[in-house]
Amino acid sequence: MRGSLGRLLHTLLVFAIAGLLGFLSTRFGFRHDWSEAQHTSLAPQSVALLARLDAPVEVVSYASSSGSLRRGIAAFVARYQAYKADIALTFVDPAADPAAMRRLGVTIDGEIELRYRGRSERLQRLNERELSTALLRLSRSQERMVAFLSGDGERKPDGAANADLGQFTALLLAQGVRCVPLVLGSGARIPDNTDLLVIADPRTPIAAPVAAEIVDWVERGGALLWLLEPGENADLAGLANALSVRVLPGLLVDGSGASVGLGDPSFVVLSQYPDHAIARGFALTTLFPQAAALAQLTTPRWQVQPLLRSSAQSWSETGAIPRAGESAATIRFDPNTEEMRGPLDLAFALSRLSPRPDRREQRALVVGDADFLSNQFLGNGGNRELGQRLFNWLLADDALIEIAERGAPDRLITLTQTRLSLTGLGFLVGLPLALVLYGSLMAWRRRRRH
Image (cartoon, rainbow, N blue to C red; front, top):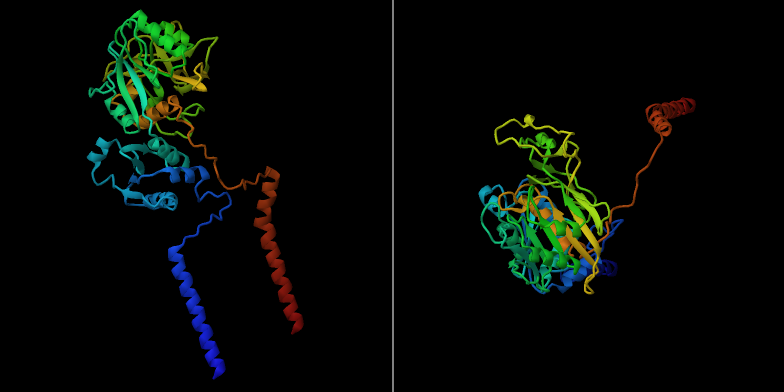
């Protein structure tokens, strides 16, 4: 009787302890990443960032309801929700309203929109570095000032026409970047609080005093983005010389676009990019209508790095370009002219030590096309994200959060052809033969016993 009572009390005690542990598990959490490279948890930089965010974060994922994409996104965002409870994740099915998705500029299944304190930013690639860096940009209280040179027929930063940049600058505004037109008269100077000066395809010659002020802005250490077009006659030869670049004559044509169904050779399609911080991890296709090719001077004053480069099937065409509907076979590379055969560069990223005491590096970009950021072509492929990357780099936001890749250790086994052949022979012949011999030995032993 006493033994039965003891066993009953022991059983009740075990159940009580189990119930208490279950109750405590609902009140206190415990997480530990047991993976080899800690790749299922957040880096310390991301955890510290989340601790500084003092307002809710909304994550909107434009992912289709079919497949496992939503499940993967939810699992990834859950890593952030474990450290910040007021991160809300919402899914929107892009197939439910394709017209609305086109108006929003959603082009990729699974595209992410982050919202924080009235600001927003889009992500087309989901990884820890991209998401944490976007959150850090959105959390900045200081607004960036980008001045667009105006008054000489440039693309309007707030315009709604096809050639204007209103849609893109609206995207920048949502990220805390204010874009304002800047008209420079004789003797006027670019304001010191300007973080970036943009020259977007002037249609008339720029007055000499204004051109001199732009060059002086560069020499003072100012950041610059120059979006130019073929045949541009803006009297900015002094600026090109200060940037150690020159514009090649003619229009860049590329026959590789035919492989993706593009019949107009004056439209350059790119899907591969030189190694640079702007294009690192960027694999989207971009479209550049009627671009100019660039070359660097032989004695550059900058560190000049190619950013966009056409294919080997391209060249700088100085003759007439076929109109829409005409055969592209009427144009060919002519080695007897000043035309140059590709690959050719259509964008340079420039950097050097900054003469300004508040900045370590001065940066500038020269792009031989202004259409790719226009309202008409912004939604093509990765044009929008590439534009964001350009501005992030120019505003020194390219490496806000450095998170090292945390993949599993290298388990690749490299075998010579001889060892590979011996391994295959062992599996095909040696292993079956060993099994036959072992079976024969066991059968012989059993016969001896009987």
